[in-house]
Length: 235
Ligand SMILES: NC(=O)c1ccc[n+]([C@@H]2O[C@H](COP(=O)([O-])OP(=O)(O)OC[C@H]3O[C@@H](n4cnc5c(N)ncnc54)[C@H](OP(=O)(O)O)[C@@H]3O)[C@@H](O)[C@H]2O)c1
Image 1 (cartoon, helix red, strand yellow):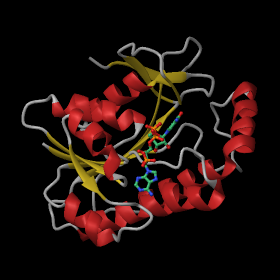
Image 2 (tube, protein in one colour; image 1 turned 180 degrees about the horizontal axis):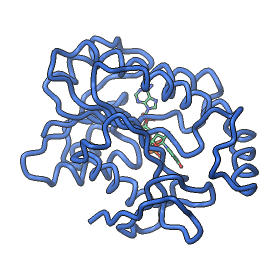
Image 3 (cartoon, protein in one colour; image 1 turned 135 degrees about the horizontal axis):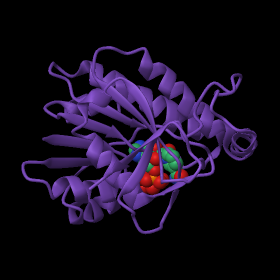
């Protein structure tokens, strides 16, 4: 399997690259925007490719995606740099990747888009949200409204596309805790977190779960009062 990771020097992406690259017959190409990150990517077992979501044209991304089976969009502004940068990276950067995938000759790679928990239409309350979820969502909006809006616009753009297969993952807030090997997938609440190790393992597992194509999936660490969720063993 040939895999490209956009946002290849990210905290989770490096963990993901290590996992994927250790599989037999799997080659990983990690897209970075800063050559100073090449050594870290190589140490993770991946091949660095230098491109910037803000500055490089979609045609350059299409060249890298050609011949790949799977592309992860795992880049992000991290909610930093103001609303304009969030829009540039989290929305326009994602759309550039979608457009690039459409330029790739068939068979096109499948895309796994890393969105976030609570990315949604904020005019509608999800039926499974508790009052505590609504309160937490309001806190997220206050702190990172531009980030969630950019992520939501990217999700909305992707769900209209049919030229390639895609999966949207909506992980909960990350921690640096040790991985547990367990995640919950489904309609989670907003008080859960997930360790970066478990996120990487979950993304890695999604690589082969092609049945998740064209469906959004939320993902969080096991949490006692989550309902309507499937607990998944990652190992
Ligand atoms: N943090 C959370 O709690 C959380 C929760 C849910 C979802 N997520 C999403 O999960 C994904 C991965 O998160 P993470 O914590 O691993 O992210 P991260 O460590 O902040 O990594 C993001 C990567 O995106 C790259 N990037 C930023 N701007 C770019 C540009 N213009 N061109 C190319 N690359 C660019 C960064 O490159 P540089 O290293 O050069 O800056 C960085 O390597 C992101 O999509 C994030 O939005 C995060």
